[in-house]
Length: 165
Length: 171
Image (cartoon, rainbow over all chains, first blue to last red; front, side, top):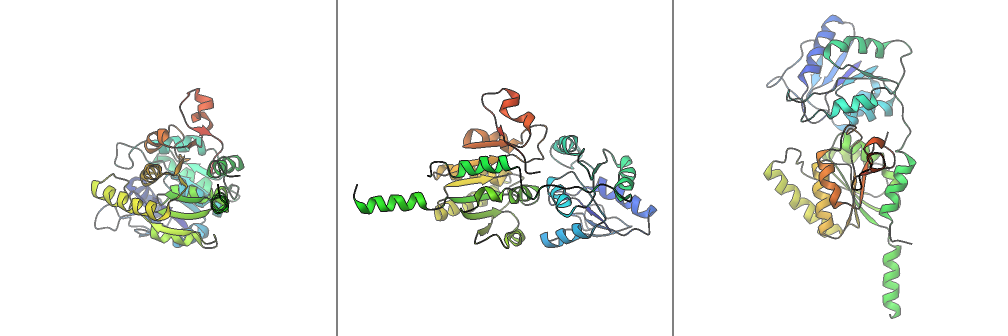
């Protein structure tokens, strides 16, 4: 199953539309989407099953079960993909289109896009190739340490305990 | 100083710090969860905008959880509700430290916490790799520890006297 998610804040019709075209061309591959729209308002794909939102536990189990996750370039889904070691394809949201308020997702992919197992599609035209790379046999899987950098944890801990002992 | 006072002050110094950890749902919360070793041994209250996230605290000891209104779009009514909820929390909990990974609700909590005498720690989201977030810039002058997760945005790299520190990232 390919799990498409747009995060928890705003719909992302550009991504969902591109995945609808991809699903139409790949009828044998199951695609499931969490898209924050319900068909009453906003775009609803014709070629894969969707829900508006998922409870955190359902979101985690969808991520864990997916062959590949396709999403916006949000840190929540990046952390989820790294936690479950599932290849991730990201399409950054762009401002000026109602997708997001600013272009921070372009900065995010510029700095995190080089990590193994994170495949960046800068535009919807790049999405099929990025997906193919993510679905390839032996594609790298994203990974991370179980916790934040020890230096960062120590710095915060020192501030919390400042003035004690 | 009599013995009773001494004992009382000793008890306060030994009492674990009371920490209010705040984040919006989504990436902000996921980042906060990766920082939990920083407050191991503290008395913890977590606050976030999605009540279902309480499930993430299973197995994390006896930390308390509260749901707070979201004010991401700065709607006036939501902001009023958020301030009221956080102010009542501050009164009841009297936290020693507010730590937040953003976004808007974290900023409001940090400002309110300071009014109630708490120290504030702002961790700007790792998503903000090009520039500090707007809430992060606003939080800077009002916090005791101001962190970015990108070395090129830290004050060592920028040379700015006023700016966030860099000491690593959640990833």
